[in-house]
Length: 412
Image 1 (cartoon, rainbow, N blue to C red):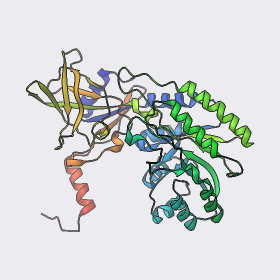
Image 2: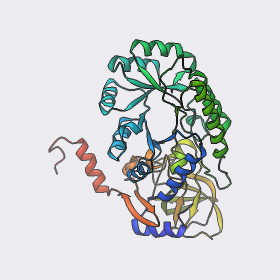
Image 3: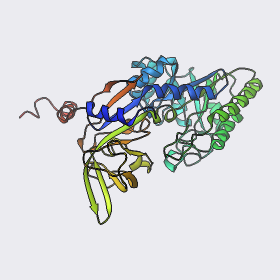
Image 4: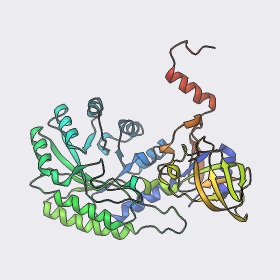
């Protein structure tokens, strides 16, 4: 990690806790690293904005040539407001209402449709238009069940066997299918599964069925190490293999298509830290608890997915190793960051850094129990700046009142 323990300690003393800190230099390094793994010259990376929608990060990625994978109109709107051109956005939504479709049409973005019924409804609203089709690659991959979005038990994508049904709807509404898409899961550690999904999409991308293709989109799922003993997956070899096969496909298709990829976690996860303060210590018959001034709504992955995040004691790194249950300040017994985790002795007031917290952490957050979300700080070329402020309790309460009240109802 580029951010030293000393710098993180300095930043929390300046900005307070809990605090998210992101290393923007590492973000661009990871973006360029992944792009270089794929040797096909017409490769484009569509950043999965759901991983982290921090506006400074979005602007930075836009300046460095990234496109955007958006899954809601809120994400589309934020991408447009942070400088992305509509041509650089692909909208992969599911369970759309008619008004969602109409709003997306007005914004001029490309829809990536993942069900036959939605495609039919889209055709009634917007016939004679360009469209991308999301197929379920019929491959199950991902570190845990909730991250697996392929296979028959997934809500995502059109089944591969339904190409003929797709063609009937396409003909009926005079669609021009310019792209095909697949995505099989998140945090994929088996590149063989990702390659199988890739091949399954190539198998149905026949010129006689889809003659107007401009790109194929192979989704994301690129993993990063979370545990200290984990190794980075060799995406360089994987990228070369995929690029060679894609070149062969394009030769068969008689046109050089773009290859789209949708990384999120790989680009931002390792750049981020959530720094919290130890506030409470407890010894329950030898079971040690360390309470902090944050909680699972501010970093949900351990409670929601059972995910591992390394925790470092910034202010007592050389203390005696003890095993702790590290928990938060939320009124729920599931509010934990770690169980039985060896950490240098934690004292009240110590600063703890929860690492690899740049992806699916703040972006999955909320204000349950009405704790305001942490501030976010960006470090670029060694210089820190506040990217998003932490609301005070009064500001959060006023925001709720403003969004909820009938004029005069809450007067004292």
